[in-house]
Image (cartoon, rainbow, N blue to C red; front, side):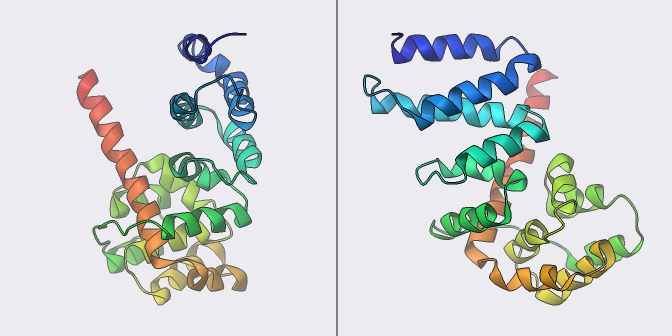
Length: 216
């Protein structure tokens, strides 16, 4: 049996081989975390969790949905990994991730110009780009938020930035035809949990900028 360090080195080698290995690699690391060998030191677990979080950022949407499904009933998964999988999760898993975020200390989140955002939505332009600019997050994240028909992801942005329900409802009306269930979601989203998750999404923009600067 390989030691934990040998197993990690092997998985890192697979990760370096490119996108073709990502789905299989994600499954292998997830299997390991779900059935952690008793011979492996507990301190090494964080290294494998960090590797899986990195892979989750690189797999396609189908791969993220599969990872979210596998960790839906996991009570000990790191919150950073769950946050990474939030937009690919079921509604019940989204609610649990927000609950865990809500239990953490509040993070300061810069506000969003709600009137500007609503005006831009009314123009029916590129909604993902508008949201990405207004909320200071990657466009890829904003695009997934706008495709969440439950409205929960949008409620996270609006409530996390301290904006009121009428703004959320207005955007839902214009972008989703305002299904009643989506309008009621705003009230179920915890303020502090939303702020912490919004801060997580915004940090991804800072990371992508740092990567581009390093490559320049």
